[in-house]
Amino acid sequence: MKLRSFSGLFVVIFASAVFGQSQNSGTSAASFLRIGVGAKATGLGEAFVAIADDATGAYWNSAGLANLNQSQVTFMHNEWLSDLRYEYLSYAAPYHEKGTFAFSFSYLSLGKFQGYDLSGNPTADFSAYDLAAQLAYGHKLSPQFSLGGAFKYIQQKIESEKAGALAVDFGALYVIDQFNFGFSLRNLGTQMQFIQEKYSLPLTADLGLAYRGLANLTLAADVEIPRDNSVRLKQGIEYNYQESIFLRMGYGYSTSGSDFGGASGLALGAGFMLKQYNFDYAYSPNADLGDAHRFSLTINFGSVRGM
Image: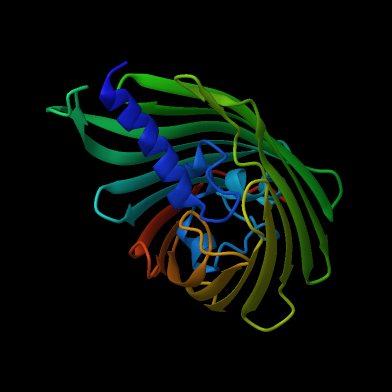
């Protein structure tokens, strides 16, 4: 076995430690699945499970897709540290009156690393990346209650070593008056094997509450319960001016340590709507690992479905 293959395995272990730091972290593979998507959601401190009202619902809570009344495409670009780049694309299309399909793709580039042979001499650089492709569906069972599910394929590659896994997500959303109640279970699936080591996926459950009873304000709070990490409490607030300009703020608190991949600390965001285009930005300062800047573009198109 080449030493750089072992170096690649170290990259996976290091990334797991970086994306989830707690006494139980590092026991899961594909930790990039913890990275929140969409500048709207991340600007709210990732308190989005009970909202999930755009194409990124494929990630947060597939039940929310059922409430889309028009087709959407969302693209997000995430700038992180020096060589870390994260891209996300989601396409959602309403199907008949009560359901919506969505296809999403995420890609994390970990950059290039110096390779070494068994004698410790430098060799050619090698690269590493993570990706996931997902098909999701949300269905409205009643005007108040929706269910959703998703099937995803996950792959990680380091130099010539690859590992893959299959997983499913489940979601539920209940709306009563100005309150939304959300639940999601993400990354329930097979193990990933790198060389001789097997790792479980980062199974995560979320409970969320959102309130829209105040003029021009949306309040949201989530409790995130990862299988291999500490519980996170997330809360966010959004102010909208004439449904065209949006200001957001959120805060995530981990019960033990910090979490680079998740909503630890302060998040700030803004967005504006211009005809069928939504532009969103979110900024997440992180004292330990640098700042994260997320940019999202959402395009609404096609006929409007009656709700």
